[in-house]
Image (cartoon, rainbow, N blue to C red):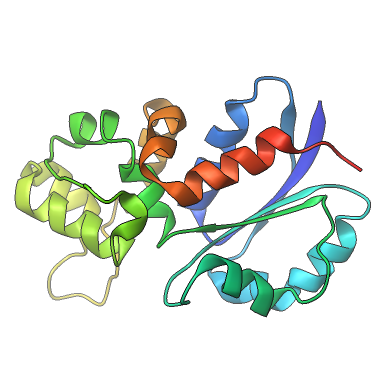
Length: 197
């Protein structure tokens, strides 16, 4: 088994990364966790993680957000040649889009309706798209957990991370989701092809 350190922005990214690793059976197991509380932590320390990857592999995930494209964001953050033990992937546009790219289990569990004819990566704002679909079609009890409370400064609902992370751990199928998210598919392919050097 390959021990691989995980670097991520938030708890939902962590849950997604762990579920992706689980696809590979005994190939990978998580080493040390590096929670970022946003992308700033990752961006500031990316060269440290790159240097450390010469000793032990690192799987790093961040959202595209407002960057023009994933390759440009990677090149901007990490100049020069990249160590093959550093698996640096970008969720386009956000990790939420990887989650609802599972067009079978997400609508079933959250009892909502949506279409992504051009794929999840084509949705302009992952979290906004998720909020919109939940608000339009999901039952009120789900809305109360996921959506920010009106009249507060909260950006997410009180149960946002708990509910979505639970869904990812129990129901999310990355085999389905990768068919509807090119950035997720590329991340999985990078892990499929990875062998430590």
